[in-house]
Image 1 (cartoon, one colour):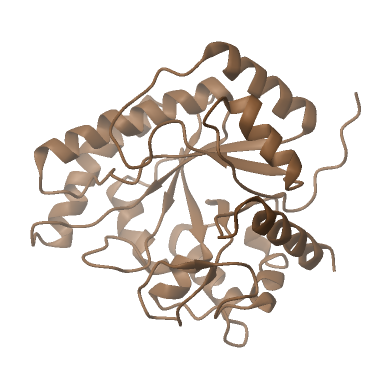
Image 2 (image 1 turned 90 degrees about the horizontal axis):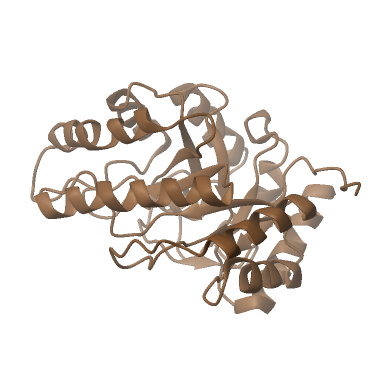
Length: 289
């Protein structure tokens, strides 16, 4: 079977998989005309590490390959390698190791994890030292058959370890700029943290700053979300593409920067299947215009 040419930037969405990765997730993907998908493989707000279903894994891998889809995993939200609570730090190791293993089993090219925060009033340097202690061994376990670990910055709430583009520098330093380390850039988060993508040339300036900080080739996934709040508000509230304070133009600009060449875009926007289909269609229109 001949697959269609892969677009410069595949566009898709986060799809539900309760009831079966292939059975439910890929049906949703087809309904929204996705070219790439993101899934949870565990409760995103819990610590459980389910084994998965080998038959569904195989079917999911085979159908993704047949349809030319890439599939990413988002690790649970509770993970925080900067936590001052030993139990949280240890559970974070166990949970992320599970997500990386499941990524290998379903053929995912990347696993997204939030960069966390320095809790308990501890200095950032102390939290980053713990990030190194807990996360670096997980990176060292990865082989070429495993997913990349993709760091996603936050919107800047609380004692976030990474919210601005330049914050990725100390985080990468803590992890020795490991070769299996990459970045998932969330447009809502980076906008809310203070990078005004909607300003003239704002998107390209932000991407330039990111490349200056971590080097080329590290950006491997984009979460394409508009923002309900203004730039610098430090609020993580997603909106549909073009319906928030970012607007359509910055998303069009994403497609023309060298750093985004070949990087998939995944939406995490409101509106259910209908809203997702509309956002995927709009991003494809902006990409192809």
